[in-house]
Amino acid sequence: MATASASSPSVERVTSERLLLWTLLVVYIFNFLDRQIVTILAEPIKRDLGLSDTQLGLMTGLAFALFYALLGIPIARYADRPTSNRVGLISLSLVLWSGMTALCGMAQNFTQLLLARVGVGVGEAGCTPAAHSLISDMVPRERRASAIAFYGLGIPIGGLIGMVLGGFLADTVGWRQAFLVVGLPGLLLAAFVWFALREPRHGSIAAALREAAPKVERITTRAALGEVLGSRAFLLLATAAGLTAFLSYGKGVWVAILFQRTYGLSAGQTGLALGVALGLSGVLGTWAGGWLADRFGRHDRRHMLTAPAIAMAIAAPILFFAYNAADWRVALALMIVTTAFNALYYGPTYAIAQQLVRPQARAMATAIMVFAQNLIGLGLGPLFFGMMSDAFKPMAGTESVRWVLYGAAWLGLIPAFFFWRASLRLGAEMAAKGDD
Image (cartoon, rainbow, N blue to C red; front, side, top):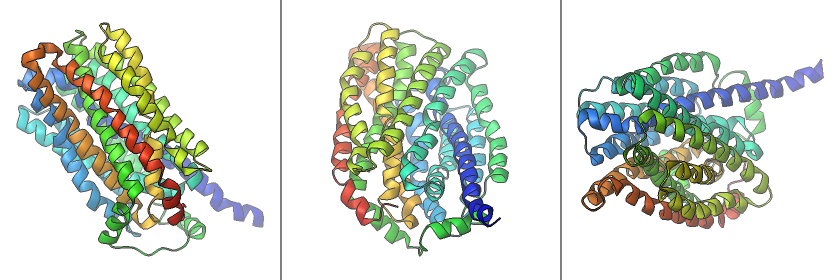
């Protein structure tokens, strides 16, 4: 009887960990689906509302990312409070961004669509910092990169569903109904999150967590920011992640447009081809990145970032040849390889961000990383690519998108360099923070 009693907290924690990870994965799939479905719908929206490529870049990127990134920091401070309910925060955020996604389908002009996208960004700001904080509380350090990579599978899976479903709906019922179809189910998921998950800071699991970790005191916002921004490794890592997102989001929007505008595929054909092939490739790369980081970084922390640095450097020339291909099938085959390579970074990057700070600043660390990735990446990537496409159009015509993507391919060498530089500082800085 005594043995069973002693083991019950561990069993309860394992069960709760699995439920937490699977539920958060589904939430993040909806998060990225609602965020990125506009990518495959961009060309039909452009034709219907008469938008320029610059307006497309603003609507798909900056309108969402500005509020998403800025609000993430105060929301993260709430998530770091010992008395906060991160489960409730995620559930409420899900209600907001799902409702605003549905409203995108009712927009009658560019301004209304822009404001609806702002609303999606406001809602989604409450998801990832709280989710990463929950995972870091529930999963031991030696499995944390894999656990965060598992959560990160929501990016390629959500992108896959968004491209395939969004393209199909755009071809069959129109882009407006596509927003309604993907937005409204999120309201049901929000109810499930609220009733199925429990905040580990409260209730019976809290005692086991307190026993496993020393008691910590809350720190001020200034101290949390100082701790995050005072880490040279974190700044290098955030720079690498931000540049990766800049290229990834920019390429994501304009590759879909390239397949429609240059190769002549419909939205449905583009969504099916890019969604399935690149989505599955992204799933493999994201999972492999977390597994490689946990396996090879166990004894030498530098090697948590070895795979992303090398893979991104290799991906650059392959991606250039992909964008130069005359046949879309050849381009897609090459992009399958580069997508897997470029997805390796997610798990190790966010796991390292959690380990470079004390537990009191974990949500803040994620929020700063999300800020860098989304303000620089999602906010400026599609917008910059759209502006460059408009600038090249007098010379290149419909090939202007391809010209922009040529440059994007070789720019992938820059984040590869910063991942390598960050890796050199990991051992000393993690040891200084206790690496728990």
